[in-house]
Length: 85
Image 1 (tube, helix red, strand yellow):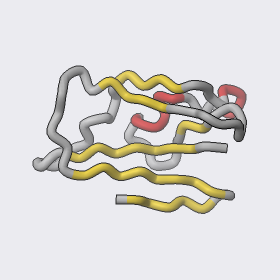
Image 2: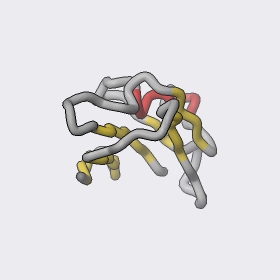
Image 3: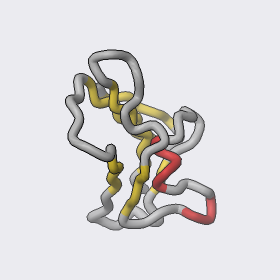
C-alpha cells in the first residue's frame, strides 16, 4: 500500500497544502483514507491507495504557483511512520 501525509511549508511558517483540494489515482475508502486526509492538518489521518499495485499517484491543488522552502512527506510502512524532509 502507498500512504501519504504531506506538509508543504513556506519560508514563513505554515502548511501551504492544508485544506486544499487533493485527488489521487485511488483511495482506501473503506477505511476512510481519502486523498484529502493527507492535507487535513491531522497527523493521525492519511491517504492510502486502494491497493499495492503501481503506479499510484496523489496530488494537491495549491491554487496558484507557490515558492516552497520545505517539502515534508510522512510515509507509513507496516504501521511505522517515516518523515522525509
